Length: 266
Image (tube, rainbow, N blue to C red; front, side):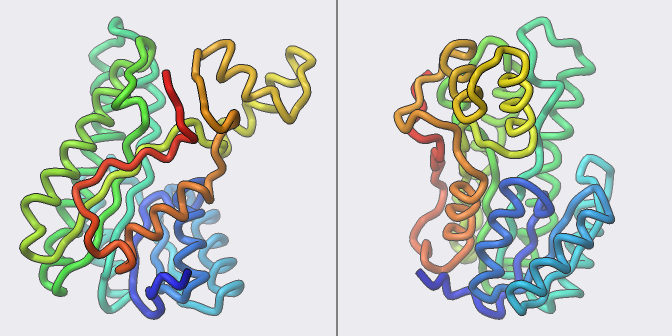
């Protein structure tokens, strides 16, 4: 399917790796112009150059950290200057590593998770929405998690903040729909980005399990995840959904929470 994004400009926070890079790749393959944002300047520059060369489209890199005050606005202003116009933004950052704890998580754990997951997303949306309104409309895609519908006892801060992302997104959809701004939230399940790929290898080595099934065995036996498709997801399987939601192909879809989790039942 041609997404109809050729020549349109998109800003991808977290676009240098994992799900964000997968979304950027899907958009670039249909001719979109992109700004990729990441914390590692060398990786950001390399990913942008690779996408630009492979798909013959304009791709720029910006190094930044949304947890720092003023960064969202600085990055958005620079992206707009680079692209000339902005048609959409996706934010795929917010791993919330310190949020993978139970109710006894410390105040510092809660604060770090709030800044990484919820405040970073709110800051990006606050900077981008006025640009989209001024430009006649556009799309925002945020990233929560399937666990907002199936909370886990060992992810209390993380799940709470991801639920906040979902509510924030619905609020934006309601408030800015009359200005032709759409906002949707994807809720990935276990997706084999770098962290889970490394975990697969480590589990196979530690337990002597076959590499191809080591992660799935842990998902089922250790974490109690019943996945209808019987496997972890791939970044491109989530990235393709994000790209679709950013495009006009989803022009009547807003305020949605979309699970991309292989049918996970916890």
